Length: 579
Ligand code: AMP
Image (cartoon, rainbow, N blue to C red; front, side, top):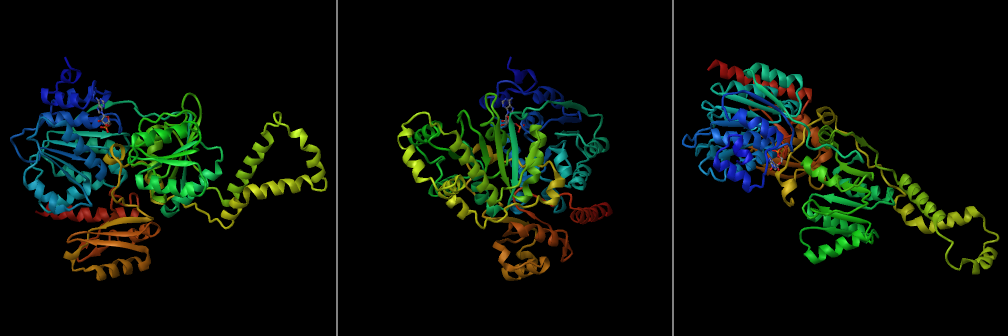
């Protein structure tokens, strides 16, 4: 009997997972599926990303759903838009042979009208982020009365992000549920409180970590502005003259452009990306393996399967969104008992990812300062001098020229020779770094506190990302729940957000206005100030919501924002209770 069948899964689901190449259930699947299939048991699964937890709850849900009842029977709530899409995508593949079951992902930052239209068609399973779900409940666009199964995925993350009231609200609005399944990587008191308040003698299962870090790798990170990424990369390469490394980028355009720029500046680097033919790829890899290239720059997809010994450094030009991708990247170094370094260039708002990674790979990350221009020159100089001293002079006919050389340099001091060598070797470095600015930025306070949110991105590990991302070219893209329906046109909207935030027009990029919502590109250094000034304010009797567009970042742990949002929610409860 197939191992999935033995857990009680039906033939169609077993067929799907077999087609996906799953041979055996993971530990969480093994432990959770038989319990969840009962449909009436509350459940707590302490498991993190990468353990196979989506299938652990997704497969039983698909089996429990009554295909003929086209209304929401299951509700999965998760912290981020990326995770929401990932779960929906996984469900789609699991239900390949149960075509009648309809799922819908509802999350912020996308057209709510489209989501409402899809919900109206009748769906069985809704996967939602808390904010958007509550918008839909308020608009009466979703009926949760017949929801039997509620899954809270990454519950600790949702609480970290300030969704406590939202979760309460959702659980209070699903009074006919027969079971609640809670998945969380950790069990802080707030998560315990949810289980105490809303769950009935839940069965609890804990599984070990799948992704433990390699102890031979030193994880380091640097905080810089997004528009200083390239400069920081160059500095880190210059500061590590013996580096034999792979640089990872998210997009092939980045891989290509950076490789071109660094090659022009004299570095031995080539890019590996999806546009290369197999022959070109082999040629690049050949040069890298033989160390004719010091550096390889690649996207995750293009770097798949690369296995090169002796890599000293892996550099994340940008952090990936998916933790698994980070472990894949960093695992290119520190092999076969050797030590390696994995450097990540982050911007100030990404330190929460570092905290999550630390937790997940169970290893400390070291925050280092981007070296100053002087540090780089000093390092290069001593590296060269070290090489000079180690040069092998035992071979070769140097003796022949020595008497003449000694005569020629008779009046020149050792210091002067050293200075001249330095000048020859380092004039370009000294010149380049003469007025080098300090690239270091502070960690964003709220992120440092927030700790452990990590966006999972379905694109991150599966295909190269070419689309716009929320932090492009030094810009951050902000979402705001005001649009033309609120009586704005572009100029008046621009005036409004600038007046409210006391910022200058120059910090803004593109503005994209829709009926209900708008998106604003803003210099990443000014984004926090704008969110701080606007999020939570009232406009025409409505609470304005403003946050980073992709990833649903909501100024977690920012007391002002949280309190005002909570008040907003309380108002909703009151109006509901009055009805
Ligand atoms: P998750 O923890 O749900 O994010 O799953 C992590 C990854 O493991 C996903 O790429 C799944 O497709 C994969 N996966 C889940 N269950 C299994 C299994 N039983 N065998 C092999 N891979 C699996």
